Every structure is written in structure tokens, then in C-alpha cells.
Length: 99
Image 1 (cartoon, rainbow, N blue to C red):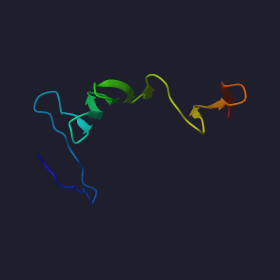
Image 2 (tube, rainbow, N blue to C red):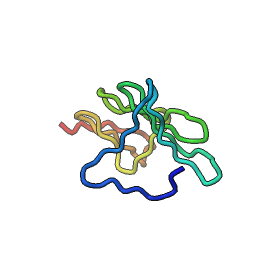
Image 3 (spheres, rainbow, N blue to C red):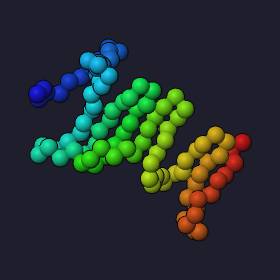
Image 4 (cartoon, helix red, strand yellow):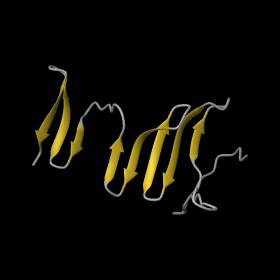
């Protein structure tokens, strides 16, 4: 166990290197061992999970970001030439062309 704060400076990388095919995970947990979140990878995909069991909530690939379940934003989301904005008056999603 490493019980110190580590700073990586000067353009250096943090590398998790696999002995075979699993490079390991970055796990966030409480002092009592309760898992809060996890970041892990398979070739070509980065996964983010949250909670005490690894449930995938987001994936990142060369094709883009994929989100599972509900997403929340106070300013909206942009995809291509469209912005997805929550219309609070009608409690709906509006697709606004941004050209």
C-alpha cells in the first residue's frame, strides 16, 4: 500500500501495464473499503463505473462517448450540428440546430 500523495510532473505519464491482458483498474473507495467508482479498460474501450458493484455508466472509444442510463446537465448537450436542451417550461428535450 502506498499511503502518500503522488504528484506526476514534467509531462510524465502514469502507466498501468498488463502482465497479460488486464492492466488493472483505478478504483475509488472509502476508508472502510466501500467502492465508489472504477475506471478500467479493454483494448479500444475505456469504461467508467460507479457504485459498490462495477456497473458501466460510460464508455469512451475512438467513435466517441457512450452513456448508459440518465444524464444530467444544466446547460444541455451538443452532438454534431444539434444541441439537446432541456425545456423546463414543457419538461421536454428540444433538439436545436446550431448549423
